[in-house]
Length: 209
Image 1 (cartoon, helix red, strand yellow):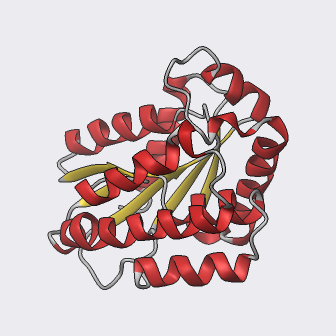
Image 2 (cartoon, helix red, strand yellow):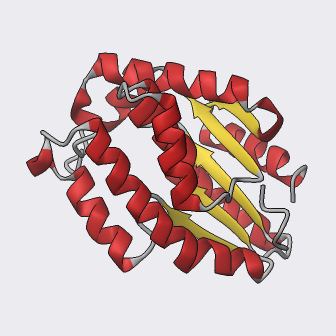
């Protein structure tokens, strides 16, 4: 947890099409209205180096990237992101809202990608140097619904194109992750209206911050 700092790290997770970015933005607005200093960020990305890795990671030109290569790319990005953005913000007492973090790696490269979980966890642990979210919110959504929401987007990326079976494993992986991390993880239905999801997300976060 982030107990060694004065800030809070809140992570919004979920499969493709679950509405993470919308909920991160809305949560940020709600917390700022209550007087919190808030930093919005996301993975992979958040720093110039991490953005360069993101372009490689998500580009359709690199469909042959293996899960192990994905793991190393994501965790290289995370190491820079944590050092350059997240830890300084936490040290300054801010609430950091991150669209994806370690749970995505465990789910996408581990549960769905087939890498041994011990390998994924070890590389991820090294990248974040022990930093963990105070709260993770998983927006749960059937894979076919999420993919249908994204189907008509012109900027669909390499991960979104991995097919229904992969994304079904992603959803199952998130639910397994949430069950194992239940004390620091809340599951919210992503099938509800954006307003209802936002209210439930905010209620969970206010119990934390």
